[in-house]
Length: 502
Ligand SMILES: Cc1cc2nc3c(=O)[nH]c(=O)nc-3n(C[C@H](O)[C@H](O)[C@H](O)COP(=O)(O)OP(=O)(O)OC[C@H]3O[C@@H](n4cnc5c(N)ncnc54)[C@H](O)[C@@H]3O)c2cc1C
Image (cartoon, rainbow, N blue to C red; front, side, top):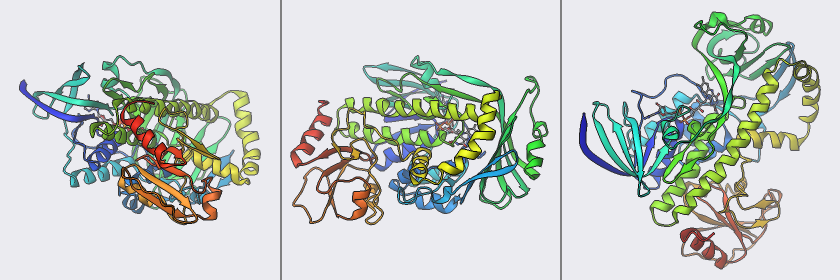
């Protein structure tokens, strides 16, 4: 039944997974009205993604929810590598990022709890997820969206919007309707994920990865004692059969001395590696799993979707408030697709290394890695590199059209380095542009357009690559937009953003 009524929104968000929820929260906080729809009757009740990385927590701090997330989650001290049932390497993952981020660890906080928390915060701001509400189709007319939506009463509504955010997951209808392929492939092997309660030395609140000639098993700790997430491979399964926990080969579990007493959730999945060729078509955007999917190695999927949401949110905000030309939105794809492609490539390589049955891969996995890993992990720069990569704090947008200027080791497009001694990230809570100056004496510098924060120079700033006296223009998402010497450069940069002249 058609309602015949038409609603108008600046932004229509399709999909209330972590990507859509964060996009809605950021936009709402900066005063942009959104409509957030999801075809399911309620949020997911299974854990799915379980780790939150430092960069996501930094964004959550900007949104004012990091303390709650950290309090509800937990971080674990070590990641242990076992080869042929012998402990070969231990990485102190709980302190790996000390000095790099206020969150130097990997936080375990399951996706279902995270979605619940985001929904709660949206509700506080007066935004409800419209459940059992499905996007059926849409058209782009005169750069505007005209969508057909079936609401919870089964009625068909017309919804107009300036922008459409496709946060609708791997089987995205938005992606299909804009004619975007999902290039890549699917691995033949089947994998399982199981949330279990049990006992044994590997259920000690740490992460364990066990490799041998034929298989691998990853054991992620969960908050409650004796609870863990197991991930492993199911070799040579009958494709027609429904796979259950009893089909998991118990050999590796036995060898790791794990006794499973209860299986709370069991699921199987095929691993894909795919990226859409574009993340934007006119006023339509693809974010999260709608734009890229890859192996779960490193727990990057959900965190990457959240990064997409933050990147697009502030740009949409600037455009809808008339402070930036719509051309700035093109930088969303430039910045995020480069990262997505690299992520898909690297997680793919890591995944092949872990799961390949080839003789050479087995040899490297079981003979070379256990010898080399403990050696290289002694170097500080290796630990730092590892943390920056896993935590996504190393993401940089140096190649972006809106990144201008460089100063020594830090360039525009880099994430603003965290200066622990003055906690320069505290100021990012405003979700707006700001100028940072790091100087011995206070500079006589004012800007009518944006707030200026001056920090007294110290050694830590030097170590982190900042230059004394430079003017850093910080984007609302905490990346450096411009490194300047004088005020005029800031003015010109902002004018270029406003008048699409870059
Ligand atoms: C078993 C499993 C284990 C995983 N483990 C990890 C992990 O350890 N680490 C990690 O980072 N990631 C993991 N992931 C991946 C992670 O869950 C996803 O990357 C994440 O959910 C992506 O979020 P999203 O918001 O982009 O999409 P989704 O969470 O898929 O949300 C999309 C939403 O869009 C809605 N929707 C779709 N079409 C429409 C429509 N036409 N109209 C209205 N609504 C629509 C859907 O109902 C859904 O709620 C795992 C996934 C699975 C399935």
